[in-house]
Amino acid sequence: MITSGGEDIAAVIPIGDLELLEALENYQEAVDEIEEARERNDLVPSEQLWAEEDFGRFYSRSVSIVRYRVRGETVGSFWDSVDEGVKKGAFREIDNSGNGVGMGWVSMEDFTDRDFKGTSYLRRNYVALSLRVDTIHVPPRILEMQVRKESAKLLEETGRQRLSSAQHRELKERLKETLKRQAFPSIQVFDLVWDTSKAVAYFGSHSVKARDRVEGHFKKCFGLTLVPLIPYIRAAELLQEKSRQKVLEKLKPCVMAP
Amino acid sequence: MDFLEILSEKSFLGREFLTWLWFKSDRSGGRIEIPGKKVVEVLFLDRMTLDLSDAETPQTVALKGEYSELREGLAALREGKKIEEARISVKAADNDFTMILKGTWYSFGSLRTPAILPVSEADEEEPIEGTFLEKVSLIEESMEILDSLFEYFMKLRVSDQWEMEELPALRHWVSSI
Image 1 (tube, rainbow over the protein chains, first blue to last red):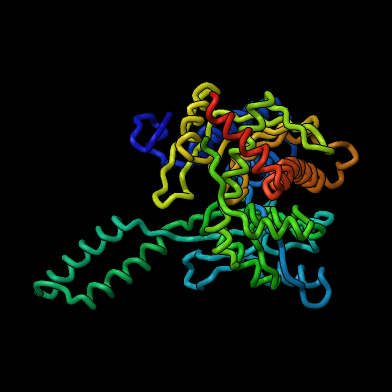
Image 2 (cartoon, chains in turn yellow, orange):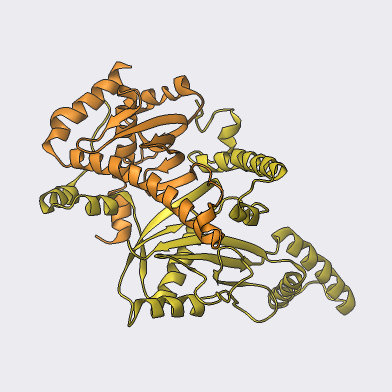
């Protein structure tokens, strides 16, 4: 039994975050499985595509899924509106400074493909997309180190005792931009499968940030709202009779302990 | 109610569902019969967390280990905690699925479906689409199984049978082991 004061290794991981533990174990397992399959030469095409480094995505053996109800109406023809939304929201760099920061839809099979030739995102009634998010993070200690070094140099050159806070801020911003140009972006890819016949979407991450991003981007592109199918919302859908739904609305937690 | 109100005021439903699911699974050797529908095999595997989130000061307990160690969770249930997430396996027909089911969001972590079979000859022209559709259908199958259990629970939960039979039986189970 592990409690917050326990000594088991699991206790160093935030209590409740079983998934992190699970992911660490699954990772090695998945790498082993892929390696064995590769030796046997029996990887199916999709696994060959995803085997390299996309563990945790839709096609991998182990995947995290948040379900959404897709609510709202599109304007005009549904499929024209979907196509327009995909192309309009395709991956692009957000700033043009060459920092490599950007966001948008890419092909589920190839995160460098943002053109979606024809309707390559369409699989029968499903729209298969990935949300690519490129970010650059400058490690704070590296930035601090550079700021100290440059400050010392400036002070020596000018013979002054200290920099004003405005100068310090300006120096820090300038160095941050310089460091950003030297760093590689971190590229994250999250899969989204939209079943247009059931108005449901499956998103491949529990991360709050990733969910906020996909919910916002989806709304912007398609004009539709992604509503997480949390227990109460799913229950209201499953309990079709009005009398049951009325009881559901008033339901309070019950005591399960004896 | 807006979404955030629902999330804070009604999230107990997910924890109650998971706790009830453990009770049903434990009492019937893993076989849960959904009236008029089907039999679903549900097993609680090696991990779960329980919490007192309905209380003012949340307290969480995480359990990891074999079946006998998970039974320590019953002590936590006796303290009034409910299951927030658990690693379970479910099976309704031929396919076995394992996942970490999360109570508050009714979402699925580390969902494992059976391996995708090699692309059949009929799909050779569109191997990507064939594999995609197979994977999606497996994911949907696992969610349909969970939904059928959740619907069973919810129908009981909003009925008179809940207070009269199901809840007393659950409390008895919690106290008897």
